[in-house]
Length: 82
Image 1 (cartoon, rainbow, N blue to C red):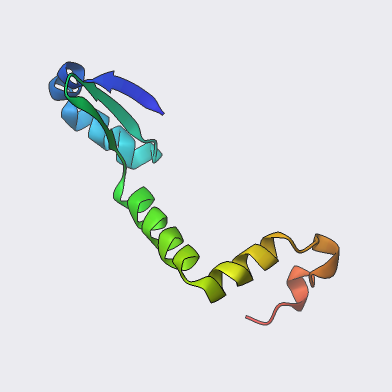
Image 2 (image 1 turned 30 degrees about the horizontal axis):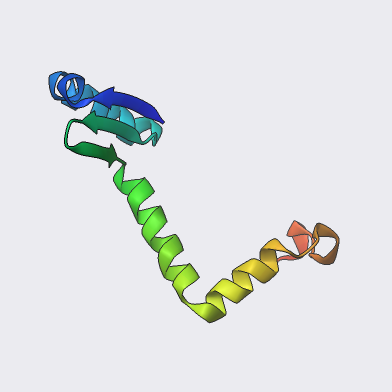
């Protein structure tokens, strides 16, 4: 994560915002009143999708089951019917 202060962010807001979007790297901005994080829309949408999936107990259980499944128990990619 890249860190900057509000003064430097204000000076170069366009480039820093473009880099956040282009490289999908969050920007941590320090201010006297507190801190903020700038993220790309793609990153934001991914976080929201993850929160929605994990807030659904059935889907959460299926995802965790998949994560904990050994690769030996999975079918090969050529066997997947798309």
